[in-house]
Amino acid sequence: MWLGGKPMNTEEVLDTTATEEEQAKPYKTFESQSDLDSYTDKRVAKALETARSKWNDELDTKLKEREDEAKRLASMNAKDRAEAKLKSREEALKQREHELNMKAYRIEAQKQLEEQKLPADLVDLVLTDDAEKTHSNIRKLAESVDMLVKARVEELSKTDSPKESAGFKTSDNSMNDIASFAQTNRLIK
Image 1 (cartoon, rainbow, N blue to C red):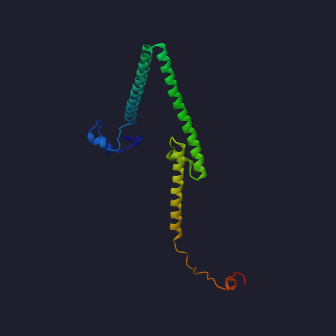
Image 2 (cartoon, one colour):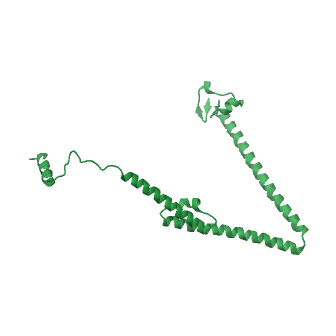
Image 3 (tube, rainbow, N blue to C red):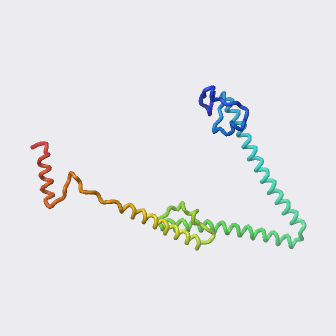
């Protein structure tokens, strides 16, 4: 018996009919590698069919929109058609301008994050459509991080200082103590 390419006990093999009880189990067993391959092929084929159906639906929607636009333009006179095309171009231009602005805002936000010594990966958390709002978000984030770091440092600094070591005592004659300790513990005398 096989489970994911590994041999299994015959007691662990499930019936191939799909029942609710079997569907609730986290794994499925197979009697042979060919059964596993067949099951895998069916699952992949189903996933591909679902994706293909979704793509076709999206394509049909886009085609219908274009047909409707073409019909609308065909029913207009030349002046109205020219105005509609101009309006369409203006909308596309505004969209492109917005995309370029967002790229510029992203680059500027990354620079500001690096100046604040924050990871540039956080840019998606602070980026907005407005440069001033983005700057404000970066400032607030930096302040929050600084407060958290300060609180953590204070927490760690509250630990007790180490007690005096039992093996080494400090005194005025510490050099003499070290010398006498070395003298008594010499291997060669």
